[in-house]
Length: 150
Picture 1 (spheres, helix red, strand yellow):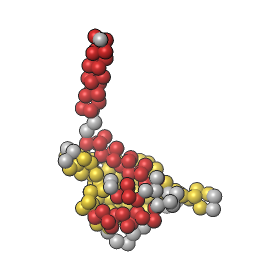
Picture 2 (picture 1 turned 30 degrees about the vertical axis):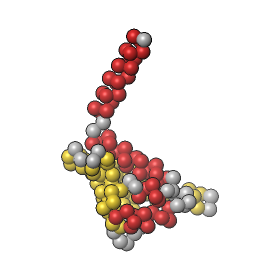
Picture 3 (picture 1 turned 120 degrees about the vertical axis):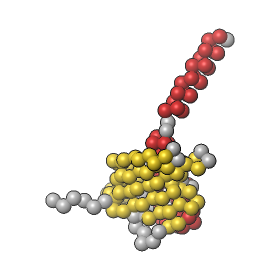
Picture 4 (picture 1 turned 90 degrees about the horizontal axis):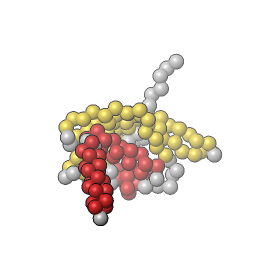
């Protein structure tokens, strides 16, 4: 019984230390990673839940700003069953406060076309905000990644 108590005490101590290590940078980047994973499952409903209900999206292929859950869901609705994938590459994270973080970087969209993978590099900026203990995307801008001229 004593060994079990010591083991439980050790596990509690370790888990509390791990929770103390996670700060705004780690928490916000976890949301960005979840965004990429959810995008790759092609589930627009779940993807729209990663944004705040008053969030804005300047989508890579959209001529308009999508504002709010319904508009963001509409933008992502063609994703369903598309086979599109997303992989986050280089990124920079700037903590503005304990409840606001900006993440900017590059990602790559890909899909199969005629049996071949077609990759589309893009760049992004996400403003993540923590409200009532939950991090979500407040603003997301995405645009094609301009390749350097040779």
